[in-house]
Length: 89
Image 1: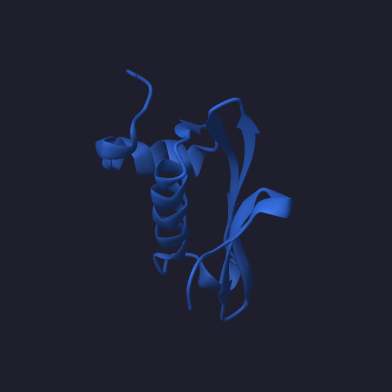
Image 2: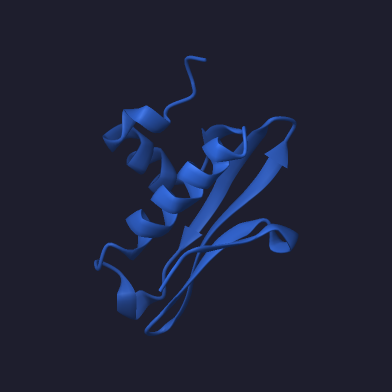
């Protein structure tokens, strides 16, 4: 299972046991605003949300975008992983 970037849908996707997990964003200039993270209810609590968000944020950085967390899950993730906090830059 690997996270894929679906640029046409502006989201990162991960196929899991009970469906599709996503981390959705919208681009604003040189920033990606992460607006929604969703994991199938049966797969919650298995670390899937953190896995998809980490991959999405790493890829976002590699592509030269700043990270703007707008979804509560991504906000919490960035608080726990300050290396992804672009708010001061």
